Length: 628
Image (cartoon, rainbow, N blue to C red; front, side):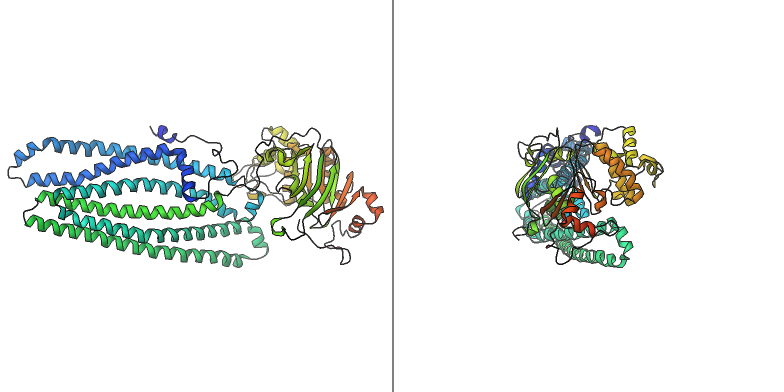
């Protein structure tokens, strides 16, 4: 039985029809985007909720019937006359109500809560994780994750609460009014006045609580973002003895959150006091009118006995519904905040008819490429400006230039982390904007200076670019990257050893050199036809680097290679060196040719200190710095 309800929401691999645009940003459209996928469950909840509310309305009627029997002149005759009615009510209460509540719980607790929550959370993550790199660079990872997790709960809870509240308001309110009017119209006056007061009460409090909830949710996400930022960069915090500064940074957000919570709770206290007073007036006024009508022989004790439990039940229901309505708008505030991260269209999308990249050779052409980062757009200072470069299939090219010359930006354009603003980049004649991003990056193996590993096993990290690889293949790749020996000696905090040991968040359990060797092993195993080495050996000591250089030479065979290094000795043996400055190519040639030319490269070579590139070229030689 439980399994039936738990599997009502089918597993999904991707959101329907939102591959690039994502969920809509409009609040109601955002809700409907997820509701429509499981609307059958919400309709079932409406049906079970209606049944529960109708049955609960019978309870005051049952009490009134009992009081009427006890005040009858001939109890035995009255009991005999009403026996079938009492038996029917008892049967409904004994069997019908438990069964309906069970069904309502199964739909809500076993189908909606696990299934709908997972669906919303998964589809939100599916869309967010496909955002471009700038999306994550412009926000806290902790805050984005917090929004993805909390939005699912809040959207589900607000819809579930709304479905339940609607029926209880309609059934109890209309049912009570109908019964009171049937008894005596004057008995219905307090309920009518209460309904009007209740609507004014909701109109006053609910929007204010919604706004306060949104502000509180945003403040909570900021706390989460700052805390995660401190934890993620804990080594930097400790190296610079900045624990107290981080305390102040996080405490500022916590204090702000506390103030927002306090304002929210002040409103909540006023909310509860006003509702309690409103309910007390309903109960006392109904009792007063009921006693007056009974004393005037206009109604029977049974009617009073029905009316008082009914208004008491209405009062209790009102408190529950009001709290539910308050919760609905609290959750709406959280959803509104979540929309800011979840309902964001992808900034970089595949063309509608984009196909998979085919790389039979690995010929790369940059044709009059122009690019500026958003913050520099319109400044007249592009990062890449009219660049033309042809890298032949199988050629090994080194990119040289001081920081800010545009080397890494050029590689980011090749990987299509950004689209060019002018010109074209082609691989084997195919424009990068006309192929899928997934197929493009699958054809390129990359090792960067800032090596980041996943918090998974070493084997999983090496196997990341080729998931079907066997353990033997993983070990062979690690051996070529001179990583096998240290991997065999690893153990983690859960007793896992060797290739099953976990690397820690961003690979924090390994040294910089170890992380870089694992990253090299990952590229070796991927065996892509195009290879980008961006400071690939910068974290290695000279002895290990010398050993790996031999393996890299072997790895480069038959591949198109682009290498970037400030340490010019590491790329001097490339077939061709391309010297960049201020987003342009200023020199090309072999190491010896460029030295003989006596230009930019020769000056850079002379200024090497300990094998590293000097930070500036002198005032008479240095062009204006441009971010790369």
